[in-house]
Length: 403
Image (cartoon, rainbow, N blue to C red):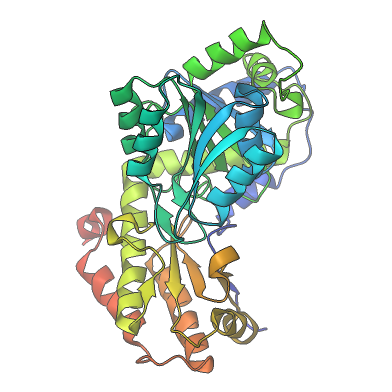
């Protein structure tokens, strides 16, 4: 086709030229004498992205799913109780992984479009008088439904009850895009992926681990038994020990690490609060467009709508896949499809990573063309117009200063 394709899925996200150039280097010796001069400062700067001073950030070759498994294997034993909730594809898959690893899972099954059920978590933790629950899972941003959960509220429950369970957060489509405060929220393990807010190709599982969690892992290592899940490839202690001098326990993805250095620099140069503000502004433009189309997001509570992805419900009798196929085949626009329980019911617009207003408008315009082709009833141009009006009225501070 003529012209560029438009990537409007919630991951992988757009690759900045700076990051692409940083990775376009000859392959290098990952055990070179000066490797520590590169790796140690990078890992320290990643702590700034996770907002932790006391914890550690570990980088594994893998994906977000690998980060999930790492959290479980390093901290739990077969039969340990875990509290989780299923309210979308990815929260559900994390619970399923717990079951595959033979953990004893208390799963709160929710309507897709809801967020982590805070009240139900409180009841489950209040009922756990013996503190049998060892870990609590929170999917901060459910990518399938465009819903963001309140991590701080879950930490507040644990603290209020004096419950010692570890707090695990899936931050794959939230960290480096929307507010995340590892130390402030008392998160013990946080999982991110390179292909979302870090603006990278897929291939790195970026995992934040609290000092408390590492202490528990060290104590567990002294009393390992036959019921341990085992660490294997995902061994936090082995990774951390090697990282201290700037190396890895096995071959790292050095090309991606070079890109990660550049993407981390870009995030810190913009400033995390500015990154969060930009994501809110772009997301709100999309939400204004959806309302102008006469459609609504999958998120049930407006207070939980995501600033990184909007899942848009099509009218009864319509098939969201018709919109997705038309957008891709006719206009070169990749929209996210519905997953699991919302397959065929939603199409998704990702608005995270290396993105600005005009790129969002391009995605919205492509979606409108596809919606026309799919026979959805709406006023063409209404969504794009609503987003333009919002963006024009809500210019970021740096643009106002330039004027």
